[in-house]
Amino acid sequence: MKIAAVVFDMDGLLIDSEPIWRSAEIRSFGKVGLHLTPEICKQTMGLRIDEVVEHWYAKHPWEGEGASKEEVYQDILEEFIKDLADAEAMLGVKEVLEFFKNKSLPIGLASSSPMILIENIVKKLGIKEYFSVLRSAEDEPLGKPHPAVYIKAAQDLGVAPGQCIAFEDSFTGMISALAARMKTIVVPEEENYDLPKFSAAHVKLKSLLEFNDSIFEKLSS
Image (cartoon, rainbow, N blue to C red; front, side, top):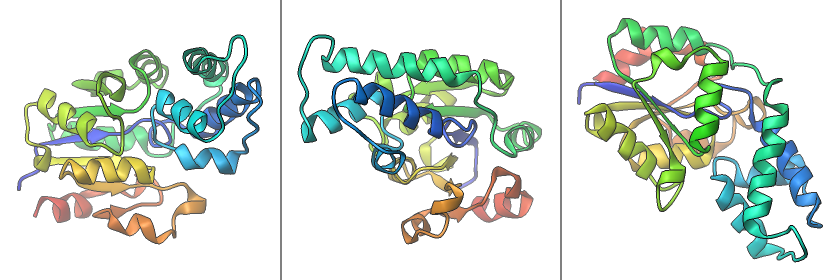
Protein backbone atom coordinates (compact mmCIF):
# COMPACT_ATOMS: atom_id res chain seq x y z
CA MET A 1 0.00 0.00 0.00
CA LYS A 2 1.38 3.39 -1.00
CA ILE A 3 2.67 5.54 1.87
CA ALA A 4 0.44 8.61 2.20
CA ALA A 5 1.44 10.08 5.59
CA VAL A 6 3.83 9.77 8.50
CA VAL A 7 3.16 9.86 12.25
CA PHE A 8 5.75 10.49 14.96
CA ASP A 9 5.82 9.70 18.64
CA MET A 10 7.32 12.54 20.70
CA ASP A 11 9.00 11.69 24.03
CA GLY A 12 12.34 9.98 23.52
CA LEU A 13 12.02 10.21 19.74
CA LEU A 14 11.82 13.92 18.92
CA ILE A 15 12.99 15.25 22.27
CA ASP A 16 15.33 13.75 24.86
CA SER A 17 12.67 13.85 27.56
CA GLU A 18 12.65 10.30 28.92
CA PRO A 19 15.34 11.05 31.56
CA ILE A 20 13.28 14.07 32.63
CA TRP A 21 10.13 11.95 32.96
CA ARG A 22 12.03 9.41 35.08
CA SER A 23 13.43 12.12 37.33
CA ALA A 24 9.96 13.69 37.73
CA GLU A 25 8.40 10.32 38.56
CA ILE A 26 11.14 9.49 41.08
CA ARG A 27 10.65 12.83 42.87
CA SER A 28 6.86 12.73 42.84
CA PHE A 29 6.42 9.11 43.88
CA GLY A 30 9.10 9.63 46.53
CA LYS A 31 6.79 12.19 48.17
CA VAL A 32 4.22 9.42 48.76
CA GLY A 33 6.77 6.91 50.00
CA LEU A 34 7.36 4.98 46.77
CA HIS A 35 11.06 4.91 45.97
CA LEU A 36 11.73 4.19 42.30
CA THR A 37 14.96 4.09 40.32
CA PRO A 38 15.58 5.14 36.69
CA GLU A 39 15.73 1.45 35.75
CA ILE A 40 12.40 0.68 37.43
CA CYS A 41 10.79 3.70 35.73
CA LYS A 42 11.56 2.14 32.35
CA GLN A 43 8.85 -0.44 33.07
CA THR A 44 6.19 2.20 32.32
CA MET A 45 7.97 3.96 29.45
CA GLY A 46 5.49 5.03 26.77
CA LEU A 47 2.43 5.04 29.01
CA ARG A 48 0.28 8.07 29.82
CA ILE A 49 1.01 9.75 33.16
CA ASP A 50 -2.34 8.64 34.61
CA GLU A 51 -1.57 5.06 33.59
CA VAL A 52 1.85 5.26 35.25
CA VAL A 53 0.17 6.45 38.45
CA GLU A 54 -2.44 3.68 38.24
CA HIS A 55 0.30 1.09 37.60
CA TRP A 56 2.27 1.96 40.72
CA TYR A 57 -0.77 2.53 42.90
CA ALA A 58 -2.00 -0.98 42.05
CA LYS A 59 1.36 -2.44 43.10
CA HIS A 60 2.12 -0.21 46.09
CA PRO A 61 -0.96 1.72 47.29
CA TRP A 62 -0.17 4.91 49.19
CA GLU A 63 -2.28 7.14 51.37
CA GLY A 64 -2.10 10.47 53.13
CA GLU A 65 -2.98 14.12 52.62
CA GLY A 66 -2.03 15.41 49.18
CA ALA A 67 -1.56 11.88 47.93
CA SER A 68 -4.59 11.21 45.75
CA LYS A 69 -3.84 9.74 42.35
CA GLU A 70 -4.90 12.99 40.68
CA GLU A 71 -2.58 15.00 42.94
CA VAL A 72 0.35 12.69 42.18
CA TYR A 73 -0.47 13.02 38.46
CA GLN A 74 -0.38 16.81 38.70
CA ASP A 75 2.82 16.73 40.73
CA ILE A 76 4.59 14.61 38.11
CA LEU A 77 3.47 17.06 35.43
CA GLU A 78 4.73 20.04 37.43
CA GLU A 79 8.07 18.36 38.19
CA PHE A 80 8.50 17.54 34.49
CA ILE A 81 7.77 21.11 33.39
CA LYS A 82 10.43 22.42 35.82
CA ASP A 83 13.16 20.59 33.91
CA LEU A 84 11.73 20.76 30.38
CA ALA A 85 13.78 23.83 29.48
CA ASP A 86 16.91 21.67 29.61
CA ALA A 87 15.62 19.04 27.16
CA GLU A 88 17.12 18.95 23.68
CA ALA A 89 16.00 17.64 20.31
CA MET A 90 17.13 14.16 19.36
CA LEU A 91 19.59 13.69 16.51
CA GLY A 92 18.04 13.97 13.06
CA VAL A 93 14.70 15.53 13.98
CA LYS A 94 14.83 18.45 11.56
CA GLU A 95 16.39 16.27 8.85
CA VAL A 96 13.68 13.60 8.95
CA LEU A 97 10.88 16.19 9.08
CA GLU A 98 12.39 17.97 6.07
CA PHE A 99 12.58 14.62 4.26
CA PHE A 100 8.82 14.10 4.51
CA LYS A 101 8.05 17.76 3.87
CA ASN A 102 9.99 17.48 0.61
CA LYS A 103 7.93 14.39 -0.25
CA SER A 104 4.79 16.51 0.29
CA LEU A 105 3.51 13.94 2.80
CA PRO A 106 1.34 15.17 5.68
CA ILE A 107 2.95 14.70 9.09
CA GLY A 108 1.18 13.87 12.35
CA LEU A 109 2.20 13.41 15.97
CA ALA A 110 0.70 10.77 18.29
CA SER A 111 1.94 11.03 21.87
CA SER A 112 1.07 9.69 25.31
CA SER A 113 1.81 13.13 26.77
CA PRO A 114 -0.97 15.63 27.55
CA MET A 115 -1.75 18.09 24.76
CA ILE A 116 -0.44 21.03 26.77
CA LEU A 117 3.00 19.41 26.79
CA ILE A 118 2.83 18.42 23.12
CA GLU A 119 2.12 22.02 22.14
CA ASN A 120 4.89 23.35 24.39
CA ILE A 121 7.46 20.87 23.11
CA VAL A 122 6.86 21.31 19.38
CA LYS A 123 7.03 25.06 19.94
CA LYS A 124 10.23 24.73 22.01
CA LEU A 125 11.87 22.64 19.28
CA GLY A 126 10.70 25.00 16.53
CA ILE A 127 8.98 22.21 14.59
CA LYS A 128 5.27 22.99 14.96
CA GLU A 129 5.03 24.12 11.32
CA TYR A 130 5.80 20.59 10.10
CA PHE A 131 2.75 18.99 11.70
CA SER A 132 -0.72 18.91 10.21
CA VAL A 133 -2.06 16.93 13.18
CA LEU A 134 -1.22 16.76 16.89
CA ARG A 135 -2.88 13.92 18.81
CA SER A 136 -2.68 13.09 22.51
CA ALA A 137 -3.61 9.72 23.97
CA GLU A 138 -5.13 11.62 26.90
CA ASP A 139 -8.22 11.96 24.68
CA GLU A 140 -8.59 8.18 24.30
CA PRO A 141 -10.15 5.64 26.69
CA LEU A 142 -6.92 3.66 26.49
CA GLY A 143 -3.37 4.84 25.88
CA LYS A 144 -0.50 3.03 24.19
CA PRO A 145 0.00 0.08 23.60
CA HIS A 146 -3.65 0.37 22.47
CA PRO A 147 -3.60 1.67 18.86
CA ALA A 148 -6.36 4.27 19.29
CA VAL A 149 -4.11 7.36 19.27
CA TYR A 150 -2.42 6.23 16.04
CA ILE A 151 -5.70 5.33 14.38
CA LYS A 152 -7.17 8.73 15.29
CA ALA A 153 -4.05 10.51 14.00
CA ALA A 154 -4.42 8.71 10.66
CA GLN A 155 -8.10 9.65 10.50
CA ASP A 156 -7.21 13.29 11.15
CA LEU A 157 -4.64 13.11 8.35
CA GLY A 158 -7.30 11.70 6.03
CA VAL A 159 -5.53 8.41 5.31
CA ALA A 160 -5.84 4.75 6.28
CA PRO A 161 -3.50 3.65 9.10
CA GLY A 162 -1.97 1.11 6.72
CA GLN A 163 -0.83 3.99 4.50
CA CYS A 164 1.25 5.50 7.32
CA ILE A 165 4.80 5.18 8.51
CA ALA A 166 5.04 5.45 12.30
CA PHE A 167 8.21 6.38 14.19
CA GLU A 168 8.60 5.18 17.79
CA ASP A 169 11.29 4.73 20.43
CA SER A 170 9.61 2.58 23.09
CA PHE A 171 8.37 -1.00 23.03
CA THR A 172 4.93 0.14 24.21
CA GLY A 173 4.72 2.67 21.39
CA MET A 174 5.99 0.20 18.82
CA ILE A 175 3.22 -2.25 19.75
CA SER A 176 0.68 0.57 19.48
CA ALA A 177 1.80 1.51 15.97
CA LEU A 178 1.98 -2.11 14.81
CA ALA A 179 -1.50 -2.76 16.19
CA ALA A 180 -2.72 0.18 14.11
CA ARG A 181 -1.21 -1.67 11.08
CA MET A 182 1.28 1.10 10.35
CA LYS A 183 4.72 0.51 8.86
CA THR A 184 6.67 0.93 12.07
CA ILE A 185 10.18 2.27 12.54
CA VAL A 186 11.68 2.01 16.01
CA VAL A 187 14.61 4.05 17.32
CA PRO A 188 15.35 2.50 20.74
CA GLU A 189 17.59 3.99 23.40
CA GLU A 190 21.21 2.99 22.77
CA GLU A 191 21.29 0.65 25.75
CA ASN A 192 18.16 -1.14 24.53
CA TYR A 193 19.01 -1.28 20.82
CA ASP A 194 19.93 -4.97 20.74
CA LEU A 195 16.93 -6.22 22.73
CA PRO A 196 15.17 -8.93 20.67
CA LYS A 197 11.72 -7.44 21.33
CA PHE A 198 12.41 -4.55 18.96
CA SER A 199 12.80 -6.94 16.02
CA ALA A 200 9.01 -6.82 15.62
CA ALA A 201 9.32 -3.40 13.95
CA HIS A 202 9.61 -3.16 10.17
CA VAL A 203 12.81 -1.12 10.54
CA LYS A 204 15.15 -0.44 13.48
CA LEU A 205 17.44 2.61 13.51
CA LYS A 206 20.13 3.90 15.84
CA SER A 207 19.01 7.48 15.20
CA LEU A 208 16.64 9.42 12.97
CA LEU A 209 19.68 10.45 10.93
CA GLU A 210 19.81 6.92 9.50
CA PHE A 211 16.45 7.27 7.76
CA ASN A 212 16.86 7.68 3.99
CA ASP A 213 15.28 7.20 0.57
CA SER A 214 16.24 3.54 0.48
CA ILE A 215 14.29 2.80 3.66
CA PHE A 216 11.36 4.87 2.44
CA GLU A 217 11.22 2.96 -0.85
CA LYS A 218 11.44 -0.35 1.02
CA LEU A 219 8.44 0.57 3.18
CA SER A 220 6.53 1.89 0.16
CA SER A 221 6.87 -1.33 -1.84
